[in-house]
Length: 377
Image (tube, rainbow, N blue to C red):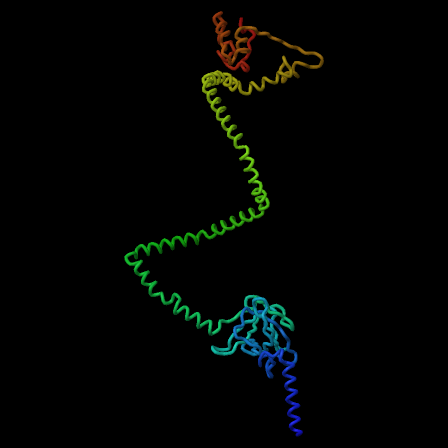
């Protein structure tokens, strides 16, 4: 009777224990297993974000270089990836930017998580209790099932089985065209060589294009304002279309009148230009004498350069010659005009000496020719 009561008491306690823990029961793997790594003194807990876990369960191994150093204690979903919690032995030292990869011990072996230092960047910091390995540092090795499925797709429905058909089609296409194919390959070689020689120019062109695009991007506010203003401008042009048409029509009529006027005055204009030519030629022939003669304007009737020679103190002497001969009047008043030489010829008819007449019509430049006191006598 006593043993029977003890058995009933034990059974009741076990039932109560099971009923209390039933809400957290998810199978044997939900309980910590004895003898696993990461349970000893000094162990710490870390987490890793992984894209896929496949068939991994709790209590899976955590390895570093084929050595088991910890245990997976929890697996949960976080957004669209998995969040794995692990406990690691206290003597395991790893950088803070370590990577976590889901691997498999053998072809048909169990799944585990492999921790390793980073390969492409220098190590930084150290993993500690509460560290999280981000999703960018998590990955998964291909499983046996995925590898076999990819090989099946390649061998059955992929392109490997069609290599023979492709080879036969290429052979048919190039039969009798060997020379053309050889020429094509040679031209491609020349093209590739030319492109290789122009790598610098191509890079410079791309950089220039990039600078142009950057400048356009910098002017985006201006372009936006222009795009917003263009419809209003087009609306104004549409409203003023009749006025613009009338203006163009009037401009056409004005152009016609201008052409007619030019045609009617063409002969007179040409004649006037021809008559202007002797005047311009005389001015050109006078050369620097014309500019030097202008100095007399401020000290007329005396030459400015000679003022200090004849005016000294409070006295001044002057010898003035007034020449009213026909040749002098002709030179002074009618040189370069249509009446040039008429008075000189009249004077010649009266018996004047040609050599003493300083006229461009008969001798030299009137501004440079010497004056004779007996001229005209």
